[in-house]
Image (cartoon, rainbow, N blue to C red):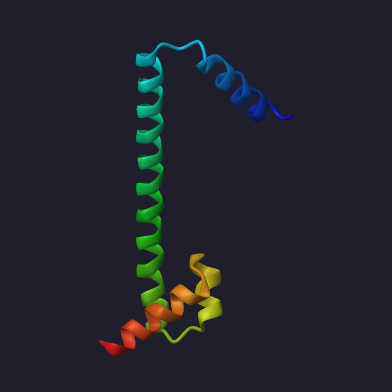
Length: 86
């Protein structure tokens, strides 16, 4: 088991000793942390989509766009189709 896994196991075992209030505070802090991570990922995806739109206009292939942005091919194809309809 690596250090991160050991730390996680220790925290899990230690939680059984927490009061209800401590456990609620911990869970609330985890939810906030998860929300922050999700928001950062959403911002990154929006940036990647904006870049993909520019690359589509430059006539790059879906594969090249996927390589440059990290978006999957299906998402790029859907974006390309959406842009062609407008």
